[in-house]
Image (cartoon, rainbow, N blue to C red):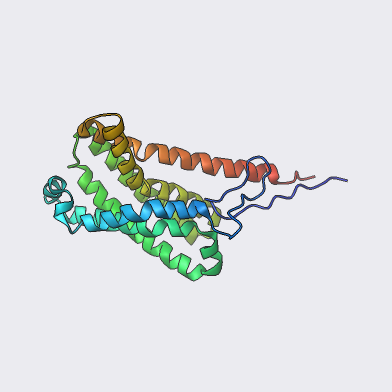
Amino acid sequence: MVKRAVVVESDDPVAGVSASTGSPRTRSSSGIDWGVVLLILLSVPIALYGLAFAFVPGLNPEFHARLLSLPWYATAHFLGGGVALLIGGFQFSAGLRRARPTLHRWIGRLYLLAIAAGGLGGLGIATISHGGPPTHVGFGLLALLWLVSGVCAYRAIRGGDVPAHRMWMIRNFALTFGAVTLRIELGVFTGLFGWTFDESYITVAWFAWVPNLIVAEWWILRRERQGTQGRAPSR
């Protein structure tokens, strides 16, 4: 007799699966998904700042003066990026997907529309970003990958490929979350390391999102590997 290995896997890409046992990671005794909570707590303040930034020049007068040369691109980027960051973390809640699937779909549609606006705006303002060619290329590539991964996520779900859709959304939100890591890193580089703002800004034009994408790919591969190991061999 061949014993079949049974693996129960969480459908939550944030909660994940235990690497050692293949069983779902416990969220908490109260059922709270702390991974999702952390994503939201880190994302929402930066999202609100981004939304305010589009309308309050006093938040950063020097940057606003630069962005005035491309006002439509700047507005689209900060509004789209702000909305995407504000609502994106909620899409990783398995509870929301199960209890409110229709709401999950409508939030997803709004998120992808926000990505389209934010990404196109990002392509425009990347050409005038502070720091010269290194930041132009870094932020421009971020905006391009942001748009491409959003299109891939949309095409996957329209084709009924839910696993592929989730993978592309993990990649996409990793790029969206670059708005959070950028500000954390700027504080670390200038405050802790003593770098100048120019040195820090050129660095975060790449370092704010490339590590995020690497972590997202590692996470996706890890889940795929666990799924493969948990399947019984065909006889």
